[in-house]
Amino acid sequence: MEVIPLGPGFAAELCGVTLADITADDAAYAAARAAFEDHSVLVFRGQEVTDNGQLAFSLRFGPPEVTKVGSLGTGSHFVILTTIGEDGEVVPPDHRYAMRNKANQLWHTDSSFKRTPALTSILSARIIPERGGETEFVSTRLAFERLDPALRAKLANSFAWHDYAHSRGQIAPGLASPEERAALPPVCWRMVWKNPVNGRNALYLASHAYAVEGMEPAEGKELIDELMTAATAPGSSYVHAWKSGDVVMWDNRATMHRGRPWPAHEARYMVRTTISATAADGLESMRPPAKQAAE
Ligand SMILES: [Fe+2]
Image (tube, rainbow, N blue to C red; front, side, top):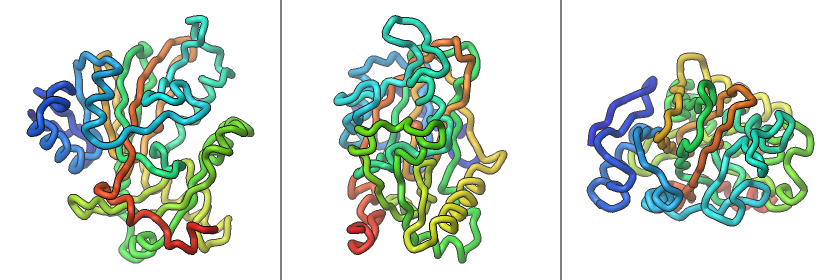
């Protein structure tokens, strides 16, 4: 297995190894897991992916999420991101599927709005547009390390509120359905996620974050906006241009990503599996003190 760096200080391609190798072999998993902890985004090219093969690979990394209400694939371990409607045709731009893609074009980390946030997301390209539709990543670990020490110390003891309805509301009022709102009440997380393997800290933020515990709403929102801007500064991203057979996985604790647009009439079909964070991934230190969680 060869690790080839791709991005500005993070993201790497793993060559000479398949998802099936990592699924079947403990040493291959250990090497891939070490690369994941180091590089935050891993790219595998030329894979022959099936749903079951992708899930078996994903399970190596921890417990799988069950897809939430309101998403395609609900109740299964797969999230289907597509612009192909039930009739087999590409949906119009105002269709719910297309609006969901727009929301995915905001900088975010997956599942920060859930009761259990995600360790990693694994995304495979099944049908891709001729051009566009890239996925762009930034390292929130490197972003944290660029901040001045006083701010870093403050953030390490600050907590932010995340809400799915907040990020969806930026695209269209009511894009989050009443069922989704009921299933996904706001949650509060420490603003810095410390990786227990290498001790490196990362900003934990997303388009879902809307308030900072103990700060006035406007002041908290301003801090979040400033940090989001700093984390996504020009020149700091890795842009993944998808090819058929690509699989990309990322560390939701240490990155943000966004989808890039593509011509609306072109089909795109991607399949995501998502693995929940556990205590071994540093989850417990992300929880706010009991007093705040109870509010
Ligand atoms: Fe995402």
